[in-house]
Length: 276
Image (cartoon, rainbow, N blue to C red; front, side):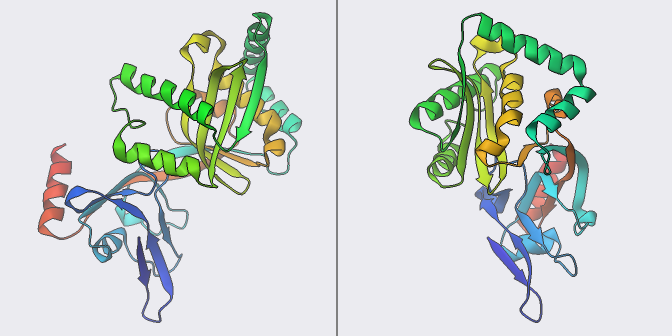
């Protein structure tokens, strides 16, 4: 972590990151967290390049930089939208009704699928709270298989990223929400909770329930139960997943950013990035 101070000793910015080989750096929580841990005050904040230099790094990259005060405009890349469920003092019933009015056909279909799942003999149950061993094993196994089937690196089982998930699971901030049919996990979310806000890092569903659209059924039930969970905000973050728009009522702009220090290795990393 790098702390930057101004001439009077006041805190100007914080860069929290994972230090990688060759002086490269990832945001804290990568590859799971969808936001970059760069915090800066509104006036006279140092640039990202200055923060990288102060940290003794050669490069820093992120696909989801939050910059609400436009502190890093000169170093920002492409913009993206993060989607957020924010009850904002609304009751779950009122919130769901507002989403139903906007996407009437979709929510009618979700009700039909839920009724069909129950008609097929499945008793559904929602569970939430700290992640227990059985939920962790079931959810992570499904996600690992999904990565393998997609031809992607299984970051669930990788030593560094797997250890990060284990630390979060064991921490007071680790939180899961899952939908079960008897003793079978239908779908689930696991991630970080802070107060009344939850940001899932891992989202997966059991392929055997795919015909019922289990991810959507989970979120419909999440909306019904957020006050019981002590939640008012559910951050679905960025990504092209089309389902997010059915639930989110807030948008948050994020930016890609890639900066390198004016060092020999920094210049080499910049050249390699341009080539890639």
